[in-house]
Length: 485
Image (cartoon, rainbow, N blue to C red; front, side, top):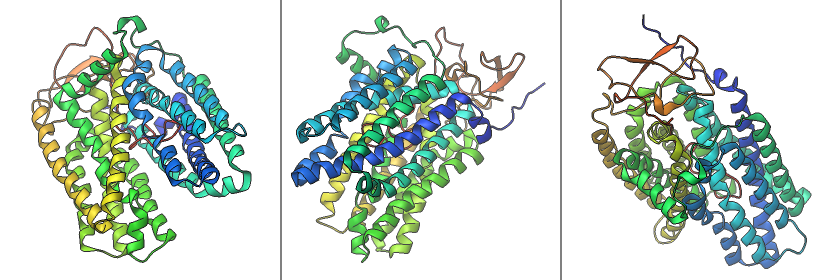
């Protein structure tokens, strides 16, 4: 008798105690980061009046992701992930507290920010890697959508009140509030999630950091399907160009700070609305089938700015492009299923590093180009480049997975309820259309079997799972892991 598991809901996701702890930590992350970002920017500029040093301080939020992504993200594969998260929060709390010491030289503040930000990558890798074990199957997709939506909402709210808070309390108290959010996040994770053994023993892997980094790059880019998924995730750097040049774009339309805020708010609001709707009402197979077309649509929408629309039409265009960006959720899920559990954190760290670094470089390039041509042209060209690349990647993905289903997909498995011991990577069954493969899942209720999909293979001897290239959109450059993934 065929068993049809019930459709997962957001209520099911928030019923899981461990997920609630992670979700609350995201709220603290977004609020604390926005406040600290404003405080540090004001501190550096107020004490130096140097735009160069202010820019260096801003760059210190991007560059450490290269070091963290390549050399530190695999800490969450070699040691218990809860321990890694709590340790990273504790270390960053100490560094941010040191920034608030009276009389701290500005160069040392920038150095402290640089070092603290390096620990964002292993934290984010650990949190994203532990989430599939907390929310297996289709619950993971809904949980990722909830985390991303929460982060975007908290980020917008935090940015809106950050300046007022710093003006009211001052720079140092604002930094100390960020310290408090690190401590609270560590407590939530330490007491709200259960301890899990490290996926691999520290001595099991290569000792050299360079060797481990090279192995991680081979893992992510050596497999055509994984490489395609990562590149689809990185396309976000083209589709977020409007955020990077929102001020000059609004100025060309005759608008001021209010118009700039509307441009930024339109993209965040559209993403916050579209992502949970996409995860809740579009099934796993359909999401993956729409992954490429939505990526193309996101770029094409931005091309319309070449016609120099007014502010209202521009807001519609940016909202449509951002809503189509919900395809990142499908990229996330497919990436999770393909990456082995003992390499999940490292793979995620490398993917996140690419998004952060590429987005920073793209914003700088877009700003420079906007001094030569109009911001509308820059956005249109960026969208066009992204759309063309998306078409090529869509074709590559379909070829790479042509034997794995009608849509070239490899979807996560839907199970009736979350199970802490669940492991997505073991749930790879027969190709779609070749008949159901039924096996007992170790984390499911006794007696339950589910229909699995994917390439037929025996369960591996070691538990496997996956990672996420952009669990909740690109990580934000800050002292804390800022995305919701």
